[in-house]
View 1 (cartoon, rainbow, N blue to C red):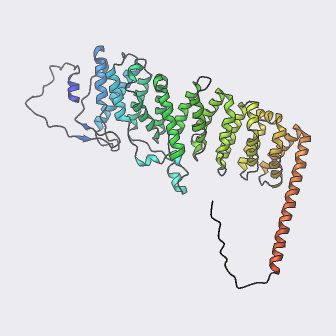
View 2 (view 1 turned 90 degrees about the horizontal axis):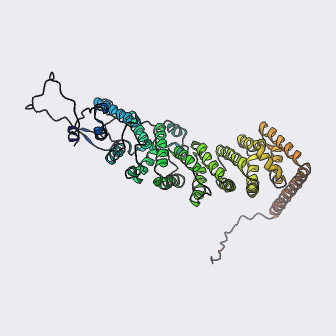
View 3 (view 1 turned 135 degrees about the vertical axis):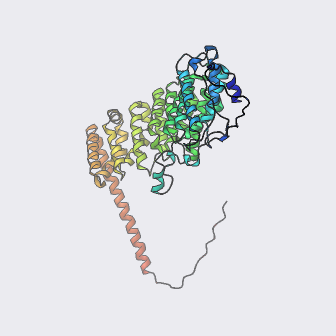
Amino acid sequence: MLKQILNKLPKKPIKSSESLEDPSITKPNPPKRSSSAVFPSSILTGIEPLIPFKDAPISEQMSLFISKLSLCCMAFDFNDPSKNPEEKELKRLTLLELLEFITSGQAPKFSEPAIFALCKMCSVNLYRIFPPNYRNSRCSRGKNKGEKQENEVDEPSFDPAWPHLRIVYDILLEFVASSSVEPKVAKKYINHSFILQLLDLFESEDPRERGCLKAIMHRIYGKFMVHRPFIRKSISNVFYRFVFESERHNGIAELLEIFGSVITGFSLPLKEEHRIFLWRVLIPLHKPKCLGVYFQQLCYCVSQFIEKDPKLASMVIRGLLKYWPITNSQKEVMFLGEIEEILEAISMVEFQRIMVPLFWRIGCCITSSHFQVAERALLLWNNDQIYNLIGHNQEVILPIIFPALEMNMQNHWNQSVLNLTHSVRNVMTEMDNMLFLACFARFLEEREKESFETEKRKEAWARLENAASLQPVSWNTTAVLVMMPPLS
């Protein structure tokens, strides 16, 4: 099939000085070479160089473009550098020539056969199933037991075929961005199946490949408006599987970056679909242990939603309180940082809706034995916006956090936390000294009640122990079987 395509191409005239081969001499067929397991299986029957684009007439350049794409559909084993070095180099040079042809801006409108041939070439070279070791993703770190296993997955795996893959990705990116591509024609081949396979490639451990995929998905989302709902739904499904099933995926950060730019284009008022995405996808993404891998991108997406509709701030904070990490101090510090960003943009009405459960949780963080958590919670008072919110609602907030401040002053082991606690106490005293004294008196009263209850409980146990000591010791014990009443 390849020879038939090559025979149709225009060829340079043979000089008279060149010797012609004897047609009676038959050459042996070249040996068949099997492709790498990374690529789809194909059989190579020999590769002949094609003429460059500059030597072909303009009317035949598109046919030459298709022929070169067909040539690049041949797959090689890049795990063994000694296999087919000449053919690999020829393919690399041909890919570079295709890239130059697309980026030069001199290419005519791409025909439907050309679009089909390019999509096929990209599918053959890019779409592949990753080996099992790729599943030890960045977002599964910490789930395996043992420090050695955690350190082993820190180094990403790089595909030996990357020098060729990079050129193919550049070709696809420039092709999608090219003004010579008609979206109405290209959408037949850059379809749902093509997009799903691109999303599957985000599982790659190679950050360079994920970066190329991110740029391509940006372009596809921007150019093919008909595919936008499907792309959003497909990315949401990836997030659902990650949060509620596997907690294993390498491309969550890159997919969130894509969605971050998508959110900025949402029109107001926000559709119900977008609100559901915030509550059912972005908020639960705070749950996995590997939150730190994509925390920055997640915060950006959430902040974009709140910037679009400030009324969503209270809903987001309720979601964060729902997934608050009780036993993970590093995540607590991250949550407190995100809370601070949200409070900087929240309105007074929305703040008053969630201030009671929020500052109850902040009070728990203030008394945390982990000094970084306590420090991060106390540093919220250094933010002018948060200070203003607290000042307008101190009658509600101070009684909630006052016991935490007093307990820190009496019991906390870290000197930095003690200094910050003392500073916050002074700030609250300056806001309303009378309220502060009232809270202090209430705190002392509650402590006296607790002491009284403790003494009362001790006296009750002492009486029980005394009564038990007066009873004669009986060595003949009898087990009594008590029948439980039947459940109604």
